[in-house]
Length: 326
Image (cartoon, rainbow, N blue to C red; front, side, top):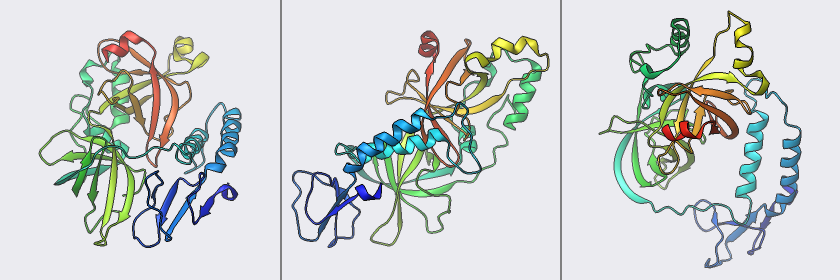
């Protein structure tokens, strides 16, 4: 699509971004009140949108029934996620940062990696898990490598301390320590905890830049301030549902997966999304959420984003009453 990319010295309807050769700042959005100077350069990819739409439709048409990946290759659904992301940010009406940011000087503890995060955020009460035989409980214990009666024991992790410089409703901006780890990348999943709190938040790295003092600045988008770690029991999908053939095999065992529920903007789980390890997403996959006194079944509907060690997934509750209870 490179032939559709526009780069011009004057404002143009197809150029939605600009930078200034006379300033050492990142590219910015073109707006109506912009004072044009001779050192500004304008660029964009609006003309690529029709072609991009064709690629998306064709990719949706040839989606394989069973998504497979080789080594570190992204899934077909993950590639579609990127295409749709480009479709949003290349358009004339792309999202803008609208939240007010205020300066603050504090520090936070930071961890990374889905497995550690899922163990440290607030856990659903494991003693409320329903319909588990002793054999299945033992299997789940082996898979989780945790004691089901005390999920916070024996979790080995190391935190980093970052300085926070500004904060908004949906994110924080900070500065990395001099000996910053190489895991800090755009798109990485991280857990965040204020020094005076016991609760872990979940966020994702969205921005990295070098500031005027030659320090690395990082921007974190907040995914959840009230994440909830749960276990999912796989029930299959469609005609492959476990309930359709479970009784035919006495040796059958369920598969359990760790997941983190991400509440919506109102901190409600009615419209929650889900974080899982890579490979967890299967279109139309059905799972039982192991929490509460009732069986809460969900169906995975789409892959929102895909990172190196996590997938952010949209799902629907299969029983509205159960969703309200959740």
